Structure formats: structure tokens, C-alpha cells
Amino acid sequence: MIDEIALVKDLQTPSLKEIAFRKLIRTYKERLYWHIRKIVITHEDTDDVLQNTFIKVFKNIDRFNAQSKLYTWLYRIATNEAISFIQKKAKEKNVDLNEYHTSVASTLLHDVLFDGDEIALLLQKAIATLPEKQKLVFTMKYFDEMKYEEISNILETSVGALKASYFHAVKKIENYIKATAH
Amino acid sequence: MIEETKNSEKFIKNTIGNKNPFTTPENYFENIEEDFATKLATNDFPKKNPFKVSEDYFDHLEDTIFSKIDAERKHVNVISLQQKLIKGIPFAAAAAILLFIGFNSFQFNLKETITLDSLSEADLEYWLDSNTLHDSDIATVLEDDIIGENTFYFSEIEDESIEDFLNTDTNSYLLNELK
Image 1: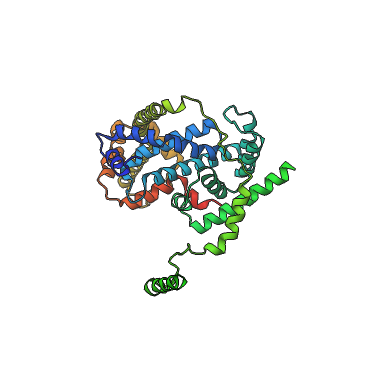
Image 2: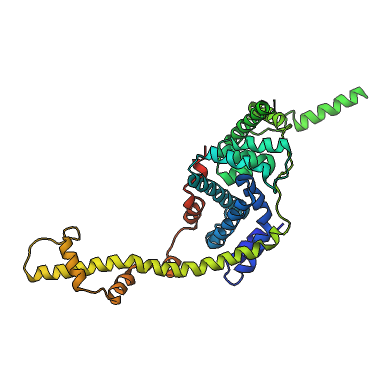
């Protein structure tokens, strides 16, 4: 467990900024990587988004307000960067977001960095059909096992709305799996 | 013994009271069926993370990010100066043209108001044939136009406003826009 307050103080001190920033990367790189990976799916895209996230954090750390938690702030930036990246990619390919997600999920079968069996692949395809917010809530709750309060702070959405989103996401996934598996 | 137990119970009830000290979160019982259905449905979903990453990926990440930050710092310095120069040229040219025409109008005692739109192509061609844009013209425009690092450093912006901006920033309120 790191001392967030001390780390932020070092990050905002010019002479200590680089050392502190290396510590920040070491502490959060894996958690943020897996969070982003579940949103953008491929390793290459995740690598891009993760680097952009850290660069954005480096540039703006002086303006970080210690009233919110550092990790919440990092997750929020990473989530925004991931969504922004997806929107940009979909625009480049001239397809809507749903089409984009479905096409990315269909590449998983041949992705050497995807280790899932048939049902794991089916789950990813089902997630790809969800609206963006439900997708985020499902991923954060189901895979990352975050508490609703944590997700609420990151996505700036009420716990009630998150529970409803999660419920609808789960139902849609269940229906998708039932319809496809039989 | 039964009597003794009853007496003790009576004592406890009288002293502590009968009120249930436990409470539930608001709307707990209203959502319990939904929560249960959600849990039941997810029981069949696979939980294992199916994604992999190359073994040494995280070992080099710090250095990769720092080399990107360094490259971006250099790039920003060079590009911003170039952009300022390129942006300044049309303004300098326009300013010089207006000054030239304005001066001529004054000389010939014309009463029309001169604007950039009112210049004819012939005026512009004539000016371009007979004048050269000097570095000093550009420098004059740039001097007022360049925003130094200190402009932001010393400006008073509330931390809260900045954080709000950063959280939405170029992503245009992405999270709020999501369905």
C-alpha cells in the first residue's frame, strides 16, 4: 500500500517529479493496463491508451486536487482515454461504436494474446453488443470486482443507476449466450 | 431455572430495550430480487481473465513512457514556434496591406472606410509586386501574439476548475454522454 498523499506531494515537487512518477507508473501500470485492456480489447490498442494516460497524468499532475483519490483520478483519465480512443477508431473506420466493438471481438479468435475458451470468447462477443456505459459497469463490477461506490466515483454516476446498468447488462449477456449457445 | 432465565430476560429488555439495532441500506429490500437475479445469471459466466500480455511488457513500460514524454517536450517546443510564425504571416501581411492602402487613401483624401474585404484583387497584386514582407513585420505581430509559459504559470485558476476541465477536457464529457 503506497502513501498516496506523500506520492502526490513528491509528484508536485519539480526536483522529485521524475522519481515519483516512475513510482506511480510501477504502482498503477498493471491495474490500469487490465482496466483499459478490457475496454479496448487488443494489446496494441491498450499499450497506446496506457501510454497516453500516463503522459496526460504527467502533464497535469501539478493541477491534481488532492480532494479526490489519486487512483480514482487515474482510473477516470484511463477510462476517458480508452473511450476517446475507441470513438476515434470507429470514426476512422466509418462505422458506429457497436459495429466497431463487434468487429474487434471477432478478431479475438485469432489473437495470440487471447487465452479464452469458447465460452470466454462468447462472453466477450456478448459484452461487445452492450451500450458503452453498461459495458464499462459490467467490466468493472464483474471482472475487476470493484464496489459500486468506487465505480460511482470513477464514472460519476449514482450507485442506483450503476446497479440498474449492471442488471440490464447481465440480462442482455445471459440472453445473448442462451440464444447463441443453443 | 426457567424463572431465573425469564428474570434475566426481563432485566435485559428493561435495560437495553427491544429495538433492532441493525439497519439495511436504503431500498435494500426493493432491489433484492434484482440483485439476486443478477447474481444467479452471472454464475454461469466465465470469470477467468482470458487476455494475456507478453512477459516483459511491464518491465520496459516506464522507459517507453519517459522517452515519449521527452520526445513530446522537444516536439512541442519546435512545433509551437513554427506554428506561431506560420500563423503570424497572414496577419502581418494583412496589417501591412491595410497600412499601405490606408496611407495612400489619406494621401489622396479618400473618404471611404478601408477594410480587408473592400480591397480589390488589383490592390493586393499591386501591393505584393511592390512590397516585401520583412522579418520585422512578422516580429511585431508575434510579439503580441506569443503566449509565454509564464502567462499560465502566474494566472490564477481554481484547482477545482482545472480538475473538472481535465476530467472532461478533450474527451468532451465522454462519460456523461455514454448511453
